[in-house]
Image 1 (cartoon, rainbow, N blue to C red):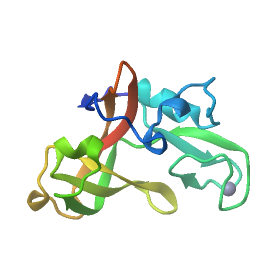
Image 2: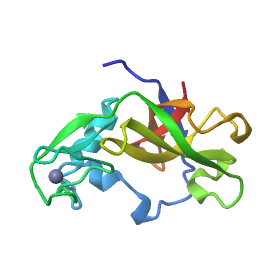
Image 3: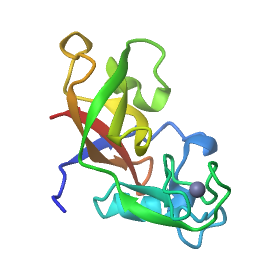
Image 4: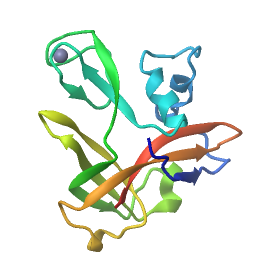
Length: 165
Ligand SMILES: [Zn+2]
């Protein structure tokens, strides 16, 4: 698969992350809070954006799950999210950004659809960079990028964001 540009988000060192916002433990396969969706974080670190699909009914979920809410099936497989999607909704966050991303405001928060939603696709919300609210319109083609979230300290966490194609 094509490799995506890595975007780096630097967090200030002096601000400790709220444990509820910290993805680090979930990224560790052996961590105290390790979950069965560890594969999601491992894939992000490898530059892949994946989620789960139910083998029984075919429903695709986001975020990835361990039980299908459609049929209660537990037989799920990992699939790659298509590289190109469509902007479904968006807004701009100008004030009141969480302190860890305050330096990046104003930024756009978008809902994008990838694949043939809802039958065979996913709807995902995320931050969007390099675009202004005024320049966007519903239906714009977007792609996902992997973000490396550096700090606080020496840990690197991984997440995703969107950018316009
Ligand atoms: Zn299912």
